[in-house]
Amino acid sequence: MSPKPFIIPIFIPHMGCPHRCVFCNQTSITGRTDQTLSPEQVRARITEFLGFKGGRRSPVEVAFYGGNFLGLPTSSRMSLLDEAQRFVEKGQVESIRFSTRPDTVTEASIEALDPYSIRVIEVGAQSMDDTVLRLSQRGHTAEDTRRSVEVLKCRGLRVGLQIMPGLPGDTSESILETGLRVAELKPDFVRIYPTIVVTKTLLEKWYHAGRFKPLSLPDAVELTKKLYLLFQARGISVIRMGLQASSSLLEPGSIVAGPFHPAFGHLVHSAVFLDLAARELQSQQGLSKSVGLRVCPRDVPRLVGLKRSNIKQLIQRFCLEDLQVLPDPAVPENKVKVENPLKRVCC
Ligand code: SF4
Image (cartoon, rainbow, N blue to C red):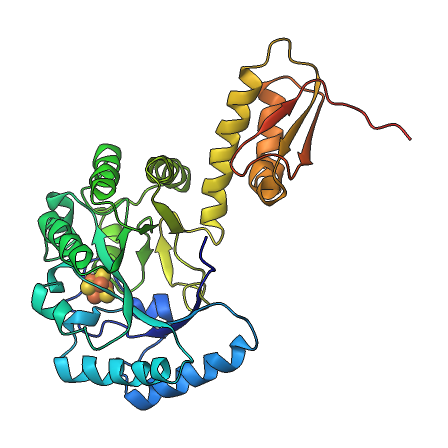
């Protein structure tokens, strides 16, 4: 497995956007209010982050996030890339990545990137349902996403797709259908951001007017779990679930409604492990009152769940008196082995 990159995020809130999508307020999400970015600011940001990196050996990537990178005027796009590329030439940065809208990806826009060390492009698909895309005022179609992935892959770029379950018009069926259609495109990775109502968006107005109802947190966890398992089964990495709890997003009033949780990804992983453990316990013949669940050490918090919620549920469901979680490096990741009955270690 390649080492996790050290990412230097450079936010370009709403820069290059043709309009505001109904759910989007990048100022609240990224904490940046200014909508301009000079090459000097890029240089300062990269230099600052390289100072934080210290002696770590992970590859360094400069990432432009929070706007529509390929929608920037050509001259400003090139001047930002030129600045980042200088660090690549000096051997301080390995590569550059950015996020963009599907309808900005064309043969010509990607060919223009040839002089730069761009390895990864993330595309904001959001949904593969054209009705959902129209209601969310995205201004592109699912076909634009399909075609953008084709163009990027033909150029040998790594592709990430971002999706937002729970947009206006979404149903459980359309969310899972989006997952299937995204998986068919075989992206290198996906990010899943269940839709939340952020302040100063059209969605906030619709929410207050009763025109939009976000997913509940349990429903968002359940649907994201299904999407996660769907991608996992096809070998597609899910690198993020739920919005990052930035300080600006956590400010009172930033989130109006919706399934936000600062540990959303952990909730999803815990839900996956609850199902795994329940299945393993179910399959036991003659279940004792005291059992152990062996997992690889990394998976212990996922199996236990927040505030031991999984343990409490399993004890109740299987009428157990004692349920111990046993870290065991011999158990592969994402697996649970039952110790039935629990072996007591006597001193
Ligand atoms: S979702 Fe993307 S394209 Fe839409 S307003 Fe936000 S940054 Fe711009």
